[in-house]
Amino acid sequence: MKHLIEIYGWPLTTFFSACVGLWLAILIVAPQFFMAELSLRFEDRGDRLTQTVNDLDVLYRHKGTMEYDLEHGPACNTMGMINPMMTDDSSCAQLGVEGKLRLEQQILETEDLIQSLLVEEQNLKEIKAQQYPYSVKNYTAMTGLHAWTLTKTVVFALTVTLIALAACYPVAYALALRSGPVKTAILFTALFVPYAVNELMRIYAWLTVFDLHGLLNTLLAIVGFAALASDEVIVWYRFPGTVLVVLVYTYILFMVFPIYNTMATLDPNQVEAARDLGAKTWRIHWRIIIPHTKPGIAVGCIMTFMLAAGSFSVPHIITRGLQPKWFTQLIYDKFFESSNWNLGSAYSFTLLLICILFILAIMAIFGVKLRQLAR
Image (cartoon, rainbow, N blue to C red; front, top):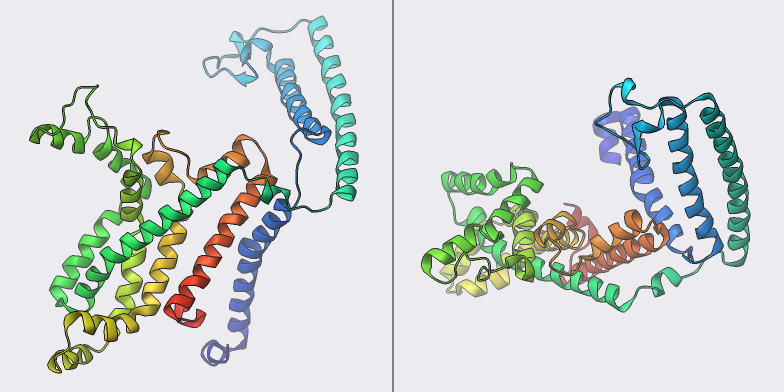
C-alpha cells in the first residue's frame, strides 16, 4: 500500500482500494455468503411450504395466460405460450362481452387465491424459520450416487492435472531454457493459435473427431481396424478417456504458462555450471530447475484442477448423455431443473471447499506461500 501511495498518491490509491474492496464484496464475498446461508436451510420438498410455492408458480402462469387472452384473444395462445405463427391480429379469435366478463372474474378470483397463498407462504416461512433455523441436512442428504459422482469428478480433475503437468513441464522447459528467440516465438504461436477460437467451438470441433462417423473412426476404417457400418462403429462418447482428452486440451495453457513464467527467471548459468560439474540431467531438474519452478507448478496445478473440477460445457457436450453426469451438471439440475436452490447451494459449497482444500494441500506439498502464488 505504501508503494502504491508513493506512485499514485492518496486520492488514486484510495479510489483503487475502494474499487477492489467493492468488487470483492459484491462479486466474491456476498455470493459465497448467500450460498452458504442457503445451503444451511433445509427445504423439505414434500412439505406444505414447498407445495404452496409450486402452487403460486402455477397460478402466476395461469394468470398471465388469462390476461393475454383477455387482451389479444385466446387463439393467439398455445399451451400458455405465444404462437409464433400468428403475428396478425386478425388471426386471433376475439372474445364476446360475456366471455370477457367471465375471464375478468376468473382473473380476479386467481388474484385473490394468489394473495391468500402469499400470506400462507409467509406464515409457513416464519414458522419454519423458528422451528428449524439452520441445519446440515442438505450436506448429509447427498445420496450414494451423488457422492460417487463428486468423487469421480475430483478424481478426473486430479488426473487431468497430472496429465497436463506431465505434458507441460517439457514444453515450458523447451520454451524457457532450450529455445532461441525464433523457436520460442514459433512455439508460442503454435500454443496461442488454437486458443484464439472460442472455447465452445473448440469443444464442438472435438465432436467431429469422436463422432460415430468422425475423423477417428474414419482413420480406423482406412487402416482396417474398424468399419463405418452402424453396428461396428466405435462409440467414443461412452469412454471416460474422451472427457479427459478434451479437458486436458481445453485447460493445458493454464498449466504451461505459470511454469514457463517462473522457469524463465532461472539463471541458465546455474544449469551450465551443474553440467560442467558432471551432474546428470535428472539431477539438474530435481535439484535446480524444479525447486526454482515450484511456485509456477503450484499455480498451474491449482488453476487446472479448479477449472477441470468446475467444468460444465466439456463433460456436458462431449459425453452426449452416454456417461454418468459430472458433478457440475448435478448442481445445474438442482438450481434450474428441480429449483432446489438450498440443495444446489450445498453441492456448490461442497465443491468449493474441496477446491480450497486442494489449494492448501498444493501449498503444503510444494512448500510455497500465498505471496509466492500471487506473483
